Amino acid sequence: MPKKIDSQMRARCVRLVREHLQEYPTLTAAVTAVARQEGVSRESVRRWLAQAEVDDGTRPGIMTEESAEVKRLKAENRRLREDNEILRRASIFFAGELVPRKREVPPPRNR
View (spheres, one colour):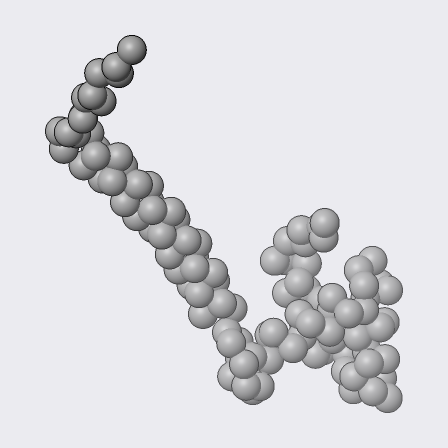
């Protein structure tokens, strides 16, 4: 399971890459140096930088707030579907209890 890294660490890594980008020949080199300095993976810093660009509007994609809202709505939708299924099954059960059942008495056996 991935470990949770606080938002301050993410923001610091993004800020460091942006501030020191001109000191490195490529973006990858800057990302690698910051990742090594902060003790996180290069891929994590790269993804954080890409998401920061999306949030800034300089790159197309789904913003962090939109992603969180979609996640929240999906969870709510799943919960509501489960609640509806429980209510549907309960209504079927109680409707069956209210209907009197006709019980046919079998004819007596001839011996």
